Structure formats: structure tokens, C-alpha cells
Amino acid sequence: MPANGSRFRRTAGFTLVELLVVIAIIGILIGLLLPAVQMARAAARRTQCTNNLKQFGLAVQNYQLLRITYPPSICVTKGVTSATGGNWSAQARILPFVEQGSVYGQVNFSVPYEDPTANLPDGTPIRTVRITTYLCPSDVHDQPRFEDGELVHYPLSYAVNMGVWFVWDPSLNRGGKGAFFPNSELRPASFVDGLSNTLCAAEVRAFTPYVRDGRVADATLPASPQAVGALGGQAKMGPELMKNTGHTEWCDGRVHQTGFTTLFTPNTVVPGQGNAAGFDIDWNNQREGKHLTVKTYAAVTARSYHDGIVNCVMMDGTVHPISEDIDLSVWRALSTRAGNEPSDGNLFD
Image 1: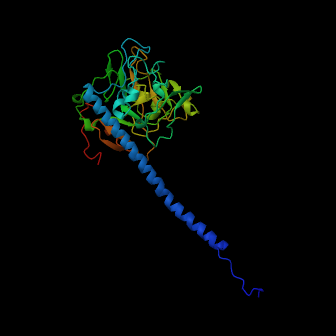
Image 2: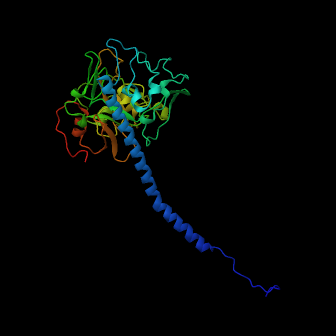
Image 3: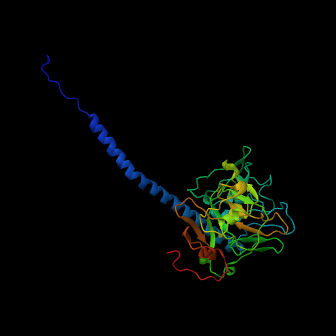
């Protein structure tokens, strides 16, 4: 016995076995909770995406109430292929109605968005401004686009409905069957199918690889995604993110930047071929306003980072998640404003 008469006592604490058991229990709990946390975060992002599209749809409606017509996808001048002004997107035209009046106030729609004078008062090019409402919180490429180290554009996640395949005929100044096309002056009465049955905008992915200006296309719908990939053209893509320039310019009103078409159902993979092999691409045969006679046809697919769906807003301002498994004929019917197609009353249930 110690001299002071006290006895040895066991030091309080965990044994190694107890510690390992506690660690194992904590690991199990984390494993159980993590999926729930991830699901909650994904749900929150989907909700924010839905809210963004709701604001988008209301902005289009408010524009129409003020201007009588809905905004065009872009304004182009017949008989001219060089930049003459007016090539701003529908997204640029509705800026005041998505709480971006200060940016809109600096836009001169008589000059191109690339013009050196198209700046904010502090000298920031308007095309580089991040517009929060136009970006889905799930888009993994919410980041500026650089060229040779210079900031040149900011992308977007929401594109306007430009029909199924045919977009624009410069010779006749005639657009497709969608809700938006160049120089359009559509009114609510133009939507024979009903505003609630016609798509206004849908999700797209920023920095999408695309092929353009191959000029080989006609009114015949390509039979498959592989058939589109075989059409060829100028590849705007590469292993580096900044080479994949589709949907990276919210100011540009051309279909590969701020539009989509319904040739294929949402999230369809369109495999590139040749120098585009290995990429999931968008495609157009001729950019609007870049040729005097060649018509524009486009396969620009709605895509999202939400599992199994793409969020869309209709022309009446209602927002719906559309399954990537939607019947192709129904998806195409939703993109035409006056196709007289029968509507599916259960589509949005």
C-alpha cells in the first residue's frame, strides 16, 4: 500500500476496443445520414432552379405586356451578314424583369453585344456579367469563359424554345414553329395550341460542345442522334473546358447559345463523329445572320444536371419537371405554338 494510504485507482477513459466501437458507430451514422443530406441539397437546388425558371417565364410575360409582342430570339438584318447590331438575345431583352434593370440600362440594342462600347459604367463588358437568374445551382460549370486569359463571356442554364428542327430562313425572313425565332413579332394569339401547352424555356448545360456551319441540312428530320453527328461542320470543342463554347454567351441570340430545339428528348446523347468523336454535342448547320440564303436547322438538346428530368417553363409561366423518358412526339408537340396537336392532360400531373 502506498505510504499515504491511498490505493491505486483505474484511470477513467475508453479502452481501445470501446474506442473502435464508437468510431464504427459514428461511421455507420454518417453513412446513413450522408445520402439524406445529399438528397436534401439536391432538392434545394431543384427548388431554386424552379424559382429561376418561374422568374424567367414571368419576365417574358411582362415583356409582352409592355411591348405587345414577345421578344425575338435575335434581330438580324436581311441581306447583311456582318454584325449590324440587334444580335442581343431574348434573355438580354427581358433583363429589367429579372431585377437586372441596371445592366439593361447600359445595353444599346443598335450595336452588337461584342461592340467595345457595350460596357457597364465601370468598363466591364456586359457580356461578361453573371446573371444569377439565368444559372441553375446544379450546373457544374457556373464559371466565366476565358479566351487567351481574357474574360469574354458568361454562360447560362436556361434557353428559349426555338422549335423542333427548322429555326430560320433568311431569304424569306421566316422563323420556325417555336415560341422564339429571329425578328419574331409573336403575340398571345399566335399560340393556337395555348400558352399552357407551349414551351417557353428549358434547361441546357453551360459549356456544351457543338458543331456549326456545315451547311448540309434540309427540312427532313434526322432519323437519329448518330445521323446528326455524321453531318459534320466546324467543331467548337476540345479536351479543355474553354474550348466547349455552346451555351456560354447569354448575350448571343443564336440557337446554339441561348436556344434549344426538340429534335431529341431531354438529356439525349448526341455523339459527335470525326473530329467531334467522344463528345456529346449540339449541332447547327448555319448560324443565324451569318449567311444570306442558307436556312438554319439545329439539334440543340435540352439537358440538365437533375436526375432524370429537365425543368421547363411554359409560355403561361407555369414550371414543370419534364422526364427524359417523355414520348418524343409529345416533346416535339410542346415546342410548336400552332401545331394543333392533341394535348395530354396528364402530362404534368
